[in-house]
Image (tube, rainbow over all chains, first blue to last red; front, side):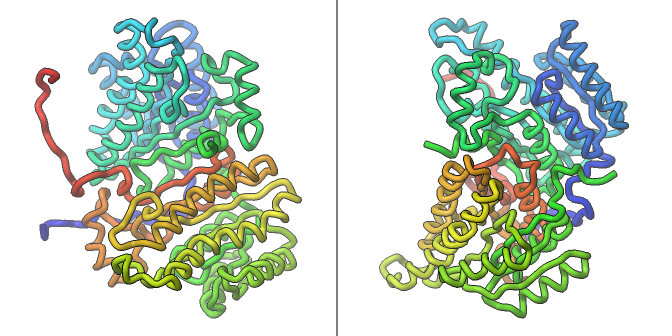
Length: 268
Length: 268
């Protein structure tokens, strides 16, 4: 066991939250959290490719508009559509990011397929669809990005999940199980790539302002907000800022899940 | 290109206990770099003055307050002096701790006095500082408290009694502060550092980081950006949360580098 060579120490940056020269890929950038992450990364100086799991006209318009925002911030950008169940499509998305932005340093998995259906109404096909979008997609993009990051000896992977990964709510079985799976994926990959300069972390987001799906019922949402110490839901921008915080980290935080939920999970 | 405003602390006042050395000194420098004014407190004035000099060299402003964080009156005086000198306290960084003489022995050998001292140093001290500063923060309707726990606050350690118990107490104390004072505008979070050796001997004792997943120990300066992030508006959505900064230690189980391979076959 005398063959241990310590991982080289990182240099202390002059400006710890600046991402100048870094290239990021945000998957699910048409989602409010994905958009916020992409914009926050660009504001911190990163070049950003934005991707969607769907090729529908609405989704393409949304993702293109995020790409335009990044362009207007003066950063390089690319808009990509990928099919996470297809290895070639995922590899092509990673290849396009590295060719258009010059590298791939940061991967944010923000794609989200919200579902809330009583478990006895879920068919195996429903389960497959929920798991494909919410669990298989981040697994496949991480896997493909990891290959590039391992070669570079540097990477920051940030998986965004819902608070439902950690707390039980009726009718959310498939969605919650998929998101809890992402937390397990996060921990396992943090170990698998621990000596490759790649950190893998998760942000566990509470019900947030403007959320589609789980946020569609205004009365329930108001009730949730009243239960929070801050009496207000977290905002997508708060999640974007937390993404930058993790993306800029020096590398000693890995395998960690950080709740961005206004203390929702801190209380009894 | 500069750091996004949300990550800056310009003009804010941070009261940092244990500021004379180690992680406290490193955080003091990061706070100064982020634009904050510093009230450094600890038992040893000479060490604080060295920290203050280093802050001044970086163009920051710091005062030094000799105190005993286990003494309620001394803590009240520390807060009063900070407000007297700077007019306000925006951030309380509860960093002082350690001093758990008696840890390392079987429980039967532990004296009542050792137990009380360990709990006083590592848990009661943080309560006293929070209690002293909260009236000021709630009156202003804003504030941030950050408690420093440890990886040992989230897992047990062999023959480790006061330290693990007090630090676990800090983790849950953090949650109750977040829940209780969130409505008054005070966010509270906790940092759980892993292995940050201060001396070459300590580095040797931890075998240079061999048993840490990422293959190196933590560097004191790495805690600074995390402290600044949690203190800043960039962490507006985060409260009641404990963030482990430990090179992947808490995400792991088994020997470092354990990477089994099991072929995919049929389910049992």
